[in-house]
Amino acid sequence: MFRAIRNLTRLVRAGRVLARHDALFPLELRGEMPAALIMLLAAAKLRMPWEERAESGEEPAARLATALEALGPSYIKLGQFLATRPDIIGTDLARDLTRLQDRLPPFPMAQARETIEEELGQPIGAIFASLSEPIAAASIAQVHKARTLPDEAHPEGRDVAVKVLRPGIEASFARDLDSFHWAAELIDRAYPPARRLRPVEIVETLAESVKIEMDLRLEAAAMSEMAENVANDKGFRVPAVDWEHTARRVLTLEWIDGIPASDREALIAAGHDMKRLGTQLIQSFLTHALRDGFFHADMHQGNLFVDGKGTLVAVDFGIMGRLDETQRRMMAEILYGFVLRDYRRVAEIHFQAGYVPYTKSIDAFAQALRAVGEPIFGRPARDVSMGRLLAQLFQVTEQFDMKTRPELILLQKTMVVIEGVARHFDPDHNIWDSAEPVLKAWMMERLAPETRLEEAAAGAAQLGRLVGQLPTLIDRAERMGRFFSDSIDEQGLKLHPDSTDAIARAQKKGAWGPAILWAVAGAALALLILQLV
Image (cartoon, rainbow, N blue to C red; front, side, top):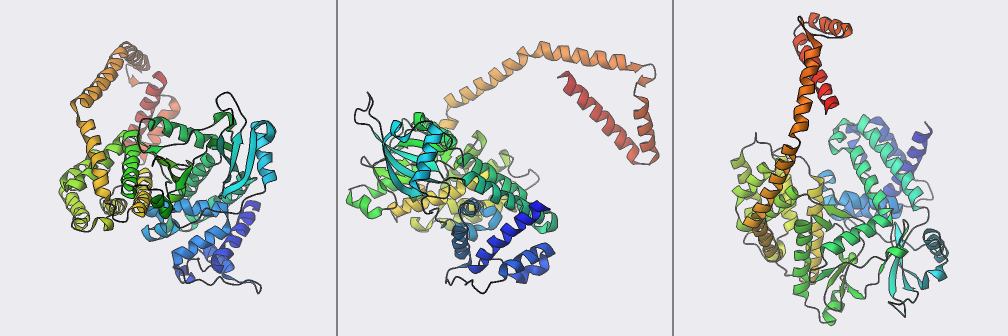
């Protein structure tokens, strides 16, 4: 009861902020809503005499983004998370939520110093020679520039960036996430039409994502992993992590002297080749996704810099994406199939991966893919988006009972952002020309005889391990045989009297008797096998 009252109060307060920005769903839909939700919206719509409604000529989705910014860190993260899930909230709303500005006023230097000293276990003077005022502040953390103490490798010290979590941010998120979870449970119980959107699962996924962002050691680990992956790549790199000065609430990394990707005029003035930067960005991202199966899923302009050598440097690794081997192969063949306009092959890949049920017609699916792909050919390159092509593809696959793949949706949304940055560098950038060499090289590598031999060798090794386990498997089979031999007398299999009584009662009920008997026998056999294994 207390949890319900507490969360209802918080949600009404949030609803009032949304109402002031005219960002609530209209009450005209109340005929389709449960009574509790109608009352909540009505309470939120009420305006006190001292409250004023924010005047804005923005579109509804843009007003929602503005309202979420006013509600603070937890709601900003909720909006950013929903922006990666157009399958849940729709493409238009997801696109508008990408405008969310994750910028908040910095917290005081005294609190930042206290956190650093507490996490690193030393006074600031024993850690850094200097620590600047905040240079950037977001919903979860803020960043300072610092200089390390001199050492043998760096007699004059070195510049580093120090990321510090906001004080009390964990408790604040915990409270809001509890409210989100309570509301999701209420909607799931009281409003059946919303269950297809899996509200509880959405909140749980958001909670897992936030949990990772709250531990800066995990972000450091993501940076370290990607740094290893791209160590020999040209044109893209990751700042080095200073592990000695990194803890759960403090992350220290190499300071990047570069021009923000958002400052196009400064990049041009510095003599950077804007066409090359656009190509490098697209090819680097596809390489990370296909070759490594590990990609930066928040690589917008604010998280990219260009250093003096023209190398792209990414920061803020709080949101990462992963693809397994099957997903990578699928994405590569889908995109390359569209490049070649081989819609039959793209359809076959969907069926081979098990993404589309075999009960569906592969020819009909190929025809639907053609309806997606053909309109893009013959159009100017600047009007063609690979990310939006994938979005249309996923919409078509829903008609063929393909289940939502969150990891592919995240890849698609990231690709839209990457394309936007590439075209910010070069408005006439041809995404497909940049992507084709990476897709073709990856396909040739995967289809090369050497790769096939490696896969065959891996299969042979697995078979060898199975053969090596044959004596154990035979022994288990013998024990199973002895068990059944001991359990069977002249009348057949011996069962406990309680079991025979239960089966007899089930048989008296009619046609379900044999089915129940087989279910009981199957369950008993499954338990037996699990025990022996």
